[in-house]
Length: 309
Image (cartoon, rainbow, N blue to C red; front, side):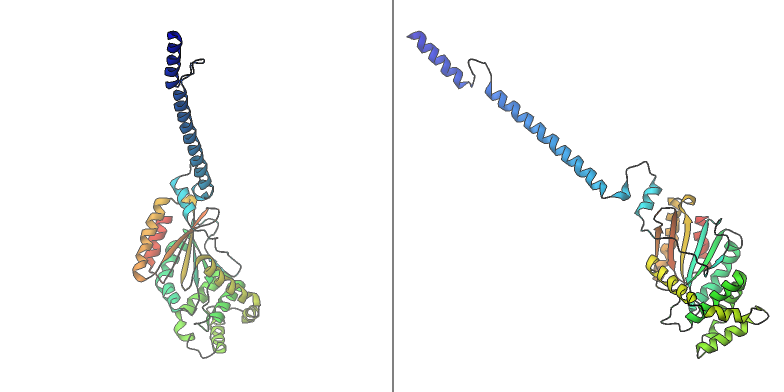
């Protein structure tokens, strides 16, 4: 009887210790072990979810591809994009577009008083020091402000036809005439009087053109469609809304981040005058486009070109 009592007490003791007498397994330790494994598995799952989320976010951020790209390449990917200005048969080109490191595009028109100021005070120096020396090329694109300048259309059409029929040298002479004599022809009372004024100059000894060719060209509707396209291009692609405005293009392979920072510092000075600027890259990142407006002094262009060349 005493032996049976002892055996019962022993079993009760073992039961209190959560030990299976037949298998010798500690149930409490098993539970602890399972809890630890569960925590580890949960941590692993959370880590995998975080990693997957990280790469998913990267897929929505193509501008920051994890490559061996330089800071310059990464900077280019942060810029807004815009295409290079188109150059048509009606856009007057000065200099060698194929070999120039920098191309200056001017959007302007001939009745604009600020365009005349820029031409007389700044452009002639740019022409002498940068275009004729082959350092940059220049493209003149029309941006006729029809709503405020009633003779922007006819003066633009005449200049296009002189360029188309007689080339850049004759166009340059006529352009000079238009700006230097702007104060005279803008006072004419009608388009017909303006035409007579232009015809008289074009038939003078300074030009000696066949005026019949110019008149035939003026009847071509494509000349006027070109001016509309040029205006739309400037407005849609670069946000240009006034004249004179400029787009400077330079190959990204010819410059670096420090040079662009220096150009930004130069252009930041324009804010004092209420002027702004924008810097774009072309969609293929081969060109930087610097866009700004205003009849700026030659010194500003000189400083910018010195950084880009």
